Each structure stands twice: as C-alpha cells, then as structure tokens.
Length: 290
Image (cartoon, rainbow, N blue to C red; front, side, top):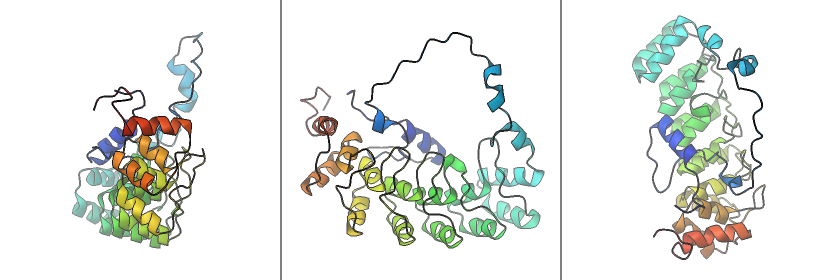
C-alpha cells in the first residue's frame, strides 16, 4: 500500500453505524485527520507515572453520555429507544403518542429518539417528535444532528420537515460536519438542493477546514460536483488551508473525479498536492500496485 493512501477509519465507522457499504467511493463524514496526515507530529513524551482509572475520574462521571445520565432515563424513554433500535416503527409511534416521554434525553451512547427516526427516514415519527418538542438540532446517532443524519442518507422529506421545524442548516455534528458536507459526501442531490435553498453555504469549512465541494471530490461524487458548479460554486475555491477540490480528489484516490476537475482547469494547489496527483495518475511510476 502506498504511504499516501488516505485513511478509511471514518468510512468504516460510519458504515458500521449506518449499515451502508463502503466501496471505491467510500461513504463517511470524512472527519478524520487526513488533511493533516502529512504533518510531522511530535512524539508522545515518556510517561513518568502509571496511568490509572483515578487519573480520569473527574471526567468519567456526570458527562453528557455518562451512566448516571442513562440511569436517569425513565421507563418510557428507555422503551421508546428500544423500539426504535428494533425498527418497530408502528409500536414506537403508538408508544410515543400514548406516553409522551422526554425526547431530549440521550442514553449513555448518545442516541436520541429524533436522530434514530431521522436516520431511518420515518417521517410520521419525526413529525410527532417535533410536535412533542424534540430538539431539531440535538446531536444524536453517529454524532450527527437529525438533519445531518437525514441528509447523509437522502431522506428528503425528513430533511424538508426538519427545516420547516427550524433545524439549523449550519449546525455541525460531533464530528464537525454540517448537513451539506454530509449530503455532498454521499451525493444526495435533492437533500443538497433543499439545504442550499434554505441558505446552506458550500464554502463553510468543517472541522478539518474543508468545504462541501471538497467533500464531494474526496468521495468521488461527480453528480454532486456538477450540481454545485451549476449552483455557482467555484471549482477552484481554496479551503482554510489553501487547498482545493483537486487535492481532495487526489487524496481520496478518485481518478475519474480528478480527471474531471483537471479538464475544467482546476489547478494543483501545492507541491504535496502534486505528489498526490502523480500517485493517482501514475501509480506505477510512484511504486504502487496497479
């Protein structure tokens, strides 16, 4: 394997969470350290004392996902989460209407009822939860907001209802990805259109400093790139690090996307980018396997 191969940890993790396949155009939030993977990192200093559980005692209790918070969940909340995790949608809706549990509590893994319903595209459940006061922006399953989870999987009607309920288009999840980043990473064109119509800005950086155009390029989502270009996006727009979609496509190993961008005159932004481009365009010359 070439030492320039991009990490796929986040793709594997989100594939596990969402039970979606990861292939040549991997699907994930992309929020790992691939943008800084070539920076020289200082070695960890030698540990002078033994690490013990007591060292972390102060931060292992009373946190947002701590066992004490989970224990505080009532029976109605626990039952609703169990029904949602078992995909018993009709039973969950009946339970929700009959008991009206607190929908803004998370279990110790960070799950919320609304995020589970949004991920599954269960519009009736989403509407009922919003009617009962569920927080449309609360981070839940997979570290995503409900809007992010729905956009990631292309549940357009859920995206639409969450936006109507006031969900923020620029609210990032725990990984720093905004809903538009997630929709671009998975090529959900209708979700992208809904988000941008509501004011989502493709130039907004995620935690790694990348904009939505680069997310589409990194995962080889050519239709998403075409849609962004048609909406007025500058394909050569630099990100917070002065990099662009060519760098992202090369880093993601997306040969077709890289060729598409290069045909449209998008420049190679740095020496490091050129190394990545060469590794994708001429793998044999770089000592990689065909």
